[in-house]
Image 1 (cartoon, helix red, strand yellow):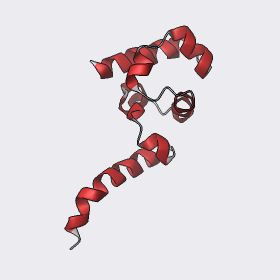
Image 2 (cartoon, rainbow, N blue to C red):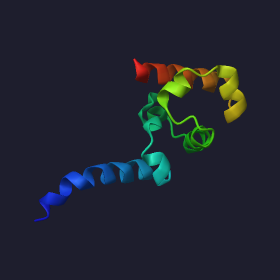
Image 3 (tube, one colour):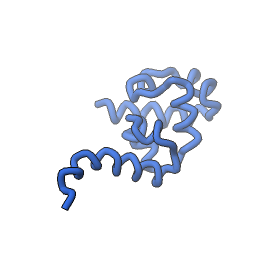
Image 4 (cartoon, rainbow, N blue to C red):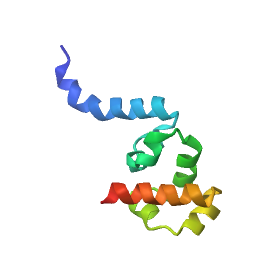
Length: 93
């Protein structure tokens, strides 16, 4: 059997599962953004893409962001920006 391939396939299978679950491309599937609890509670493919395209690709960057800046850059409500920041802070701690 091809058991020697299993360690190499682990990350690939995880990436594929994320791609299917969230409907995202490979670049986002490998992102740490998927560790933020906000995205486990609701599918938010568009918001993930906006974060990635805005170069907000780390949990720390989001958790330290100003809500008004997130609202402007991501074109989201203040409520969504605050939830995203809070959820990111929970991931960091």
